[in-house]
Amino acid sequence: MNTDDLNDDNTNRDGTPLKGNNHRHYSEKGYQLLAERFASKAIELLKNAEQRTKD
Image 1 (spheres, rainbow, N blue to C red):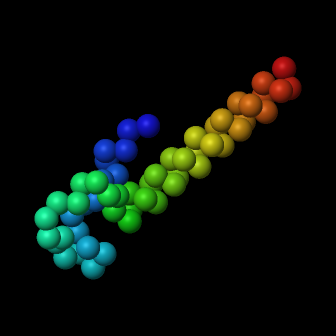
Image 2: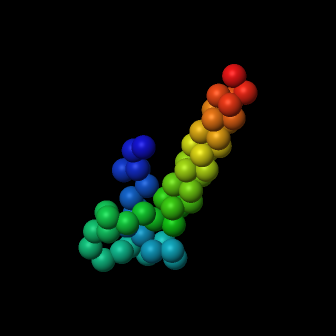
């Protein structure tokens, strides 16, 4: 799963610019998107596993 788009957007929560680069951490929005992607993939995997056990 590509997560490069989730890296910090270089702004604080109040919108002010961060000092320096923070490209190793996700922004708050990035963490939310990551959680949504994990949840979506987990649901997909569970549905596929359930379907295989029915076959």
